[in-house]
Amino acid sequence: MSHLGNWEIAANLLKEQCQDLQLLLYMGEKQKEGVERLQKEQLRESGVTIIGTGKDANNPFSAVEGIRFLQNGGLVSMTGDIIWRDDQRQVEVTFLDHIAYVSEAPFIFALVSGAPLFVFFAFRVGTNSYHLTLSEPICVSSADRQKRQENIRQAAQQYASLLEEALRSHPFAWYHFTRFIH
Picture 1 (cartoon, rainbow, N blue to C red):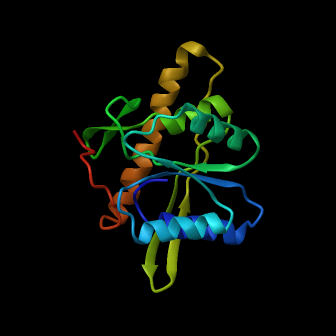
Picture 2 (picture 1 turned 90 degrees about the vertical axis):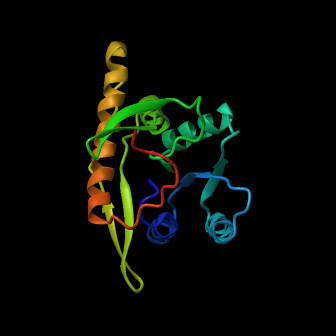
């Protein structure tokens, strides 16, 4: 998931369509959340697991919980387009013909768990009308140790290319408030 489109609609629709779905969202925590706090509470009440992350959060147990969630057949959603901390692991990609950095975490989760990555967007296209897109699976192979970093880089570039394509189609739907392109 990225900060492009409507994450809360996407999560609600997934739970509505697949009530038995195990869904975990890694979400940023802000000091003063208003509407977003209510959205998170509603999602928790519908059975969605939410793990808060922030600039000071660096809890390895939350990563283990996500890996186990994937290994047990659940879906894990985390942002790829935000770098929360300066010491966070990042992958360099090309985005809009510039250098950008995406979080390495989604790709590490895929590598360790063996689960494929899917890039998902939900765009509002009218009153109570949304356009949902789901990418083909992006697999991050771990068979050859020496090629792991290259496999992560290639998967990250696939993600960045899908993000760029979606941004070109919906330029006013990206809610990104930090520097992304370098």
